[in-house]
Length: 179
Image (cartoon, rainbow, N blue to C red):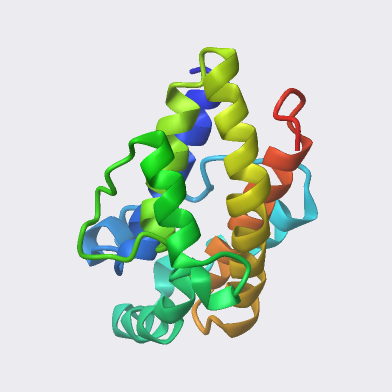
């Protein structure tokens, strides 16, 4: 699997988890490790919490999602606005896949990022990727990661907060992304 494809898959995993509560059957079937294992402290912290996920109360997970879901609308952090995101979507000719959610919702923003990673094949798409990461994704999703780490009650969402922080770090440190 190419790096862009892997990043695209990770975006979809996060988007799915920020769109709604994971299905209980899927929760119980999760592996012992996250999709990426590395030596970053964020990844290590995420894995420590991930080990506790299997025993979590599903109802508590739902309550945790409800308490956190306002922050999944990325304009919550005041680093970007709904109108800025909509304008970027227009320029990219991107139709948000989750029409019921705001354009600046994490699920829609990650869906666009997944698409860009998959289609990052030329200088033009690479320029769009670099711009989107630098102006929209890294600042807002770094804030979301910290918010989830601090405010989540469940190991599941705390782990996702740490894994999201790790993903932001990895994207910033990936040679060639120009961030």
